[in-house]
Image (cartoon, rainbow, N blue to C red; front, side, top):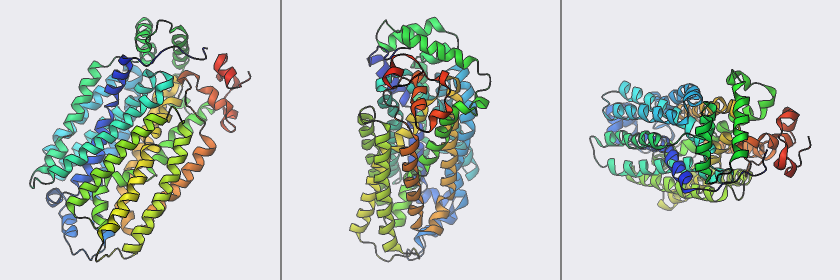
Length: 506
């Protein structure tokens, strides 16, 4: 096996990765739009009148429990259950028909959901639309990170893969800006917000027709001559024999696997399975989706008015996007572990600060008579520093690291587990967040801070550095690890230059 595959970052690869990364727009737009729409008075009045009445009650009443409504949280979170189910189906589609077809399915189903939501007449229509959006997101989130990891030269894999997270943040920011303007259209502004989801869906549908298949996917489907031509084109060199041979060897191994789901339970895949579950689980328990979904609701609860709360959401969306660029710059320079640990420490400090700010002003009763503007600004400032930390650590790396550590024979199945775990915990947290806010009050932020501390310790001890390692050579990283090494059989660790460089003795 070769120590380093030749190849450079060609304009062709850059263009395909940018188009593919647009798959993140649908997920981001949805996260941004749902929080904004659920704080629009006309939307609440039409579909959730009980929340509308509670919201218009005297502000001296308990601020923590204003939005506690089961149908309202079901509207937001039904999407994530649907995404969970569809990501399991998407695994088979991605493996048998290629990554592009999964993206195409995702875009078409998402588009149908957006049309139904824009024309919704009752809560049932809203929820059917949300479920279709969820199916679309399941397909896109399963296939796009895999596509990016397989197309990118390994030296630039981190930066190109984070394009997916960057487009999620762009989607969130665009949704927040549109919410701000559409909220001014009293009767039907919310229809424009929900229907706007058609635009990112159309982008991913068109993109999937323009994109080439990855060499890995072509080899997996027996199209070897096409794959070698594609590999030469995307690497920009003719000497791709070493990389091609490794891809074919990985594909031959994967063909021996009849049941990738059952194989995931084998001892040698223990580290991969642990990360496929732990990383998305912890990513949701940073508390970020709570901040992003409900940023307008949260800021309104802290005491901002309608407009001000949507502006605050635009600010956090902007911070999210800019900070993701830091990750693109640093992930292949400083490594994955450094960003994970620095981001964790920064989030922990901010969550403790937000807890203290909200506790001092709202106390346990949740009643506040007068919230000074400077005080609200301090809370938003801490939330922005927290969002920045997430956006250059757990945000992008929560998708990047799982997509680059799986061997080809379990890659589609393991990526489906990552997406499913992510969606399941997004669903759980979306479903119980408002109830928790009502009962735990400011303690909710302590709850998330505790998990940020736990996940940082987990990364420190159990996640090896994967910077600059070709995907097909990743087994040596686990073999060398102080804990995971015992699970990896000797014949799984590679020979060759990289093995020598890393000091693996066979």
